[in-house]
Length: 171
Image (cartoon, rainbow, N blue to C red; front, side, top):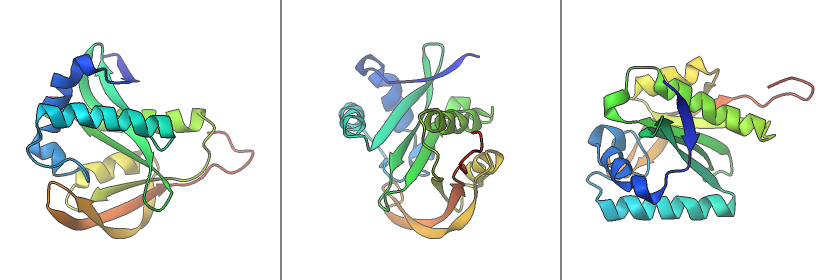
């Protein structure tokens, strides 16, 4: 398995749409509603590219060769904090890919000279995501009511943080 994070081209919109239309994925996301259509997926890709140009987000596809198997990236959240997110296609879960994808995003940030704290949120009923972040060294940093388009409002969520790199300390 050769994993890469790379931009999702419009030519892969059908694979992206299939992944985004999975209720088990959208229920654990803040911004993916239940029952998206292909037009929503195309629009989402376009919006994310605009946010990347503005410097507020980077979304990448997680690819095994030429097969889109997940998504991962970073964004500046509502509190102006650096936050990461990731999701794996339902056919590829349970293989450690979420951990690898999240680690790749952390590496992307650190190799890009970002040495501040990195945050993540996960819904309290999504313990698998908590284990992913714990493996990467994220530490508890509180709880919140996270917005979820698929859940139709807010839901209890954990906030976790990967501490900043101290000056003189290697990434």
